Image 1 (cartoon, rainbow, N blue to C red):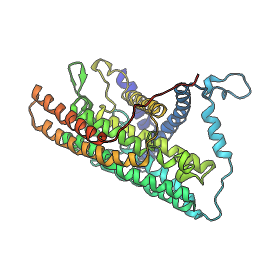
Image 2: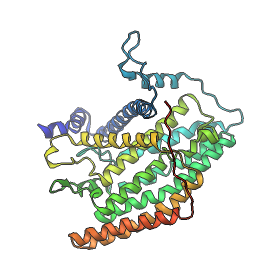
Image 3: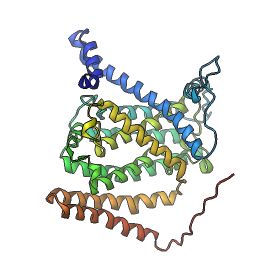
Length: 398
């Protein structure tokens, strides 16, 4: 029964394809996979915007959306109608294009941003037998299509003919290029252990259980360090706080999409959240066992449910970080990338190589911890030396 429920979407897809001609089945199969991915993650985007606004309101001791509900009734449903209201507003708002803007490039910039983000979902194993494209170089494909987002950001900033938009685009590109390096290097540690670029094989390598805990890579010294480096880089790649400098409202008004309104702005907003879901999904695939259950006795729960439980948990942590950590300065952001993140990612590769060739046992764990904690302390103390930083005091408004 549990296996039937686990494969319900796969069985439903094969059942639908059985009524179609053989020559059309490959094309329809691709279209069905695309439709499911768009609907599922677009719905998650709508729910996340509501959760984030409610969560940040709780953290900052203020009201979140709590009025929008069922029209023509007094039922508010805790403000769950807010995503629908935001969607209607985005569709009906006037599309304003600056007179001096390059109108063709200005129009295509948000479209070019959304398409690569959606393509990255093609190689993410959402559940057992639930990956749109199972290719041997799936991880390489993910990073290749993700690199195209930098082009769209530059298109948006340059085509607007606005100095604040161009400044925001340049800051965004510098940030994305800088943090792509530790992001990819932290993923290389998993590739070294698995010996494959296939996301499906990476998940299979974490399918076993050893005692109480599963054999996920995050439960190793190098895997834990790689996961932390990966998620910090993911925050920067997604322009999430405390790395949201490209759209620093207090400095450059709104960054590279300052001249966008209506549905075009909504596409930028959608792409940012879809990118956050995609990079979090990749982190789950690489370090958190993918769609596998955390305990052997919970494997009766559908695999796709575990994937989305892990994804929502990571998203809630990112919302928590946004509500508690202040924004960095530009020089702090770049120094952190090149002087701390990059050396730690390179040293972590040395750690995973030594871990791979050492025999299992206590010495292996001691060496693994030493190769993670030692560089962390040395780099941290070296970067903090001579800064003369005072202790920060927080005061809460009554």
